[in-house]
Image (cartoon, rainbow, N blue to C red; front, side):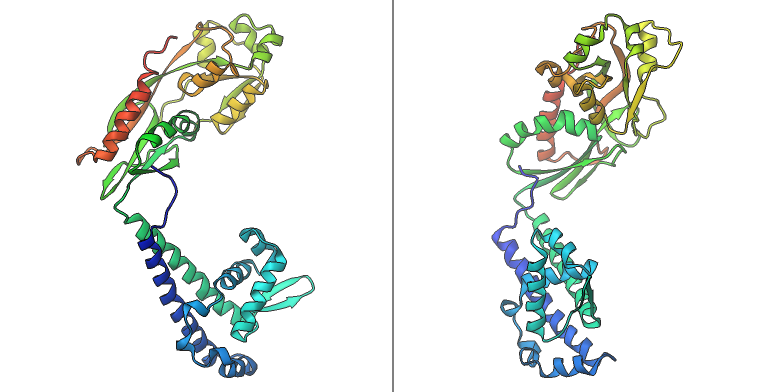
Length: 369
C-alpha cells in the first residue's frame, strides 16, 4: 500500500510520448502564431531566419531545452524570476540563465528586463500560454495512465480532520505493512462525502455524529466519552481537586464544524453532569481544530474536554492526565461510524480494510467511564 503516485516503465513511456507529441505541435503552432502576428517586424525576421527554427517540423523532443521551458513557464506565471526560483527550489540566477538559454535557442526575446524586475514580451506571453497548457496536459496524461494501473486498488477515505490525525494515521502503518495492493488517499473533510463503488476504486467515509444517516449504510465503530484532560504540570500547580475548581481555570473549546442539526456536548453539559452550578462563565479560549486545543492542553495552557478515542495514546504516554481519574465523565450521544454505499457489492480490497478497521475500533468499545 502506498499514498504516493508511482510511474511504472510503461506509464513513463506513454507520458514521454505525450510530451513529445505535445512539444512538436507546440513549437509548430508557436511559430505560425508569431509569423502571422501583427507584431514587430524584427521578431518576424528573427523567426524566419533563426537557423534553429528554419525547419520547425524537424525539431525533436531531444533537442528541446525542457528544464529551460519549465523555468520559463514558472517565471512567466508571475513575471518574476525570484518567484519562479522559490517554486522550483533554485536561485533566481539559475532561472535567469535557463530563460536566457531558451531565448538563445529560439532566437526570440521572451522577457523585457528592467532594473526592478521582468515582464514577458508579446512572444513570451504567447509561448507561456502554450507551455503551461502543455505541462498541464502532460501531468493529466501521467495521472490518467497511473490511475488506470491494474496493480493496486485505490481507496479514497474521507473523515473529520481530528479523527484522521489523532486516531487513524497512527494506526494506518499497521495496515500498510500487511497490505500492498491498495492505495489509500485521505480526505480531511467534516462534511459527509457520498460513498461510492467504482471500477478498481472506491470512496468511503468515517463520520462523527448522531444517526440515522440517510441514503447510506452505517457500520458502528465505537461510542464517545468526554472528560477533562490537562498537562501533568498544570494539575500539579493548579490545586484542582473538585469539578468546581475548573471554573477558575482556562477552558479550551473547539468550534466543531460537523454539519449536523445536533449540538456536540461541551463544557456546559459537562458541568451539568458533574453537578456544578455555573454562576459566572469561566475563562475560555476557542480553536477551530481539536488538535490545536489538544496541543495547548499538553503545553499547560488550560484544560480541554477530550474525546477518549482521540486521546487514549496521550493518556497512556502520560503527556495528558485526567484530573478526576475515571470520575465525572460525560457519555456523548455522538458516535463514530463507517459510511458505505447502499448498493453494490463491497470490493474485496475494501472488505479487507473494513475488517481491519473494525478490529482496531473494537478496542474502544465499552471503555470505562
